Image (tube, rainbow, N blue to C red; front, side, top):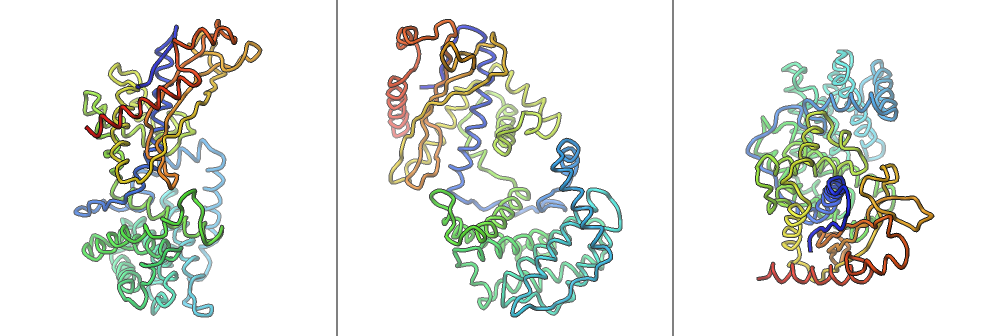
Length: 458
């Protein structure tokens, strides 16, 4: 049963609210459902520099966040202040602590990231020159200590960020020196079986080392495409080993500190891959949705991507710019865009995820959505009794979940309002046959799930 409205007034307002909520919900749920499979990106064409994390042209979005948000502004100012303090510091030296060079690797990441960021955001040449000086010094190390490969991974990550972010401004000689160091002292040792035990690990070493090697591969891919492709494909296949440890509820067997360490690098790995190659999960998720216009289909994917990354944000903030904001509002206003069409496509994608599962639970629940800030004549209904002025919507959903607790998708959804004039026990009894309520909602949605499943199997 598709999304239904049992409204007496202003249904257009409610449909827009309904559709917005649906897209946010589907975006978050679809990420979980599609995360079960990791697919290799297309590696035939490498994007232009900078291609890692903060790609070319994204400085404007950072500037807007700094302007609008005091927390962003404080972080920005703290990085600039730290970068200024680095100007007069001596460059790093290859000094081991015990058998480790890890402290130098981490300082490499901090210095080069901060200095490169500061240059990209301000254009002040002092940051560029200091980052270049640091990278050239590290390039002269005899090695990056492959016997403790975490050291190599973090050193490679820091050097790769600087090389990529400052690529257009570094001299040809500097680029050649830094690029060769990333290859010889970072990437090549990862193929030595004496050092690459991280590929079989199910703990943080896998996440940190695969992330560092992937950053190096992305940085030098133009000049060394084959080895870069090998490293990225290897990482995509093996990083799933430690990711399995998060099941079923996000916990981590190594405790909080290593959860933070491994997860941070895992997220940086995923972000770098998505930024460089894009993600096809949206295409897979909405391949069954046809709004009747290719541009509307593409706009749907863009809006879901924006909202799923910032589900708490307003449309303008989630969109990140006026052009995408205007496109989102036009999308919501289009007559062909309905919750039924979008939910139907998501249901089809969800049903395709069910067969590999041994057991699928259909979890139902009802929740109230409070829109107390809206006007009383906006088509919303009461959420409580006559003494409670809160207005809003009621939503009843059926969520498909596997045994590990991973959400596979939204199977059914119903949304309705209570007429403020009919508030009261007696009035609610009279409405039992005119809207989903109580046990009837649960039964009707359960029956609807069975009908969808039978239709898909046939």
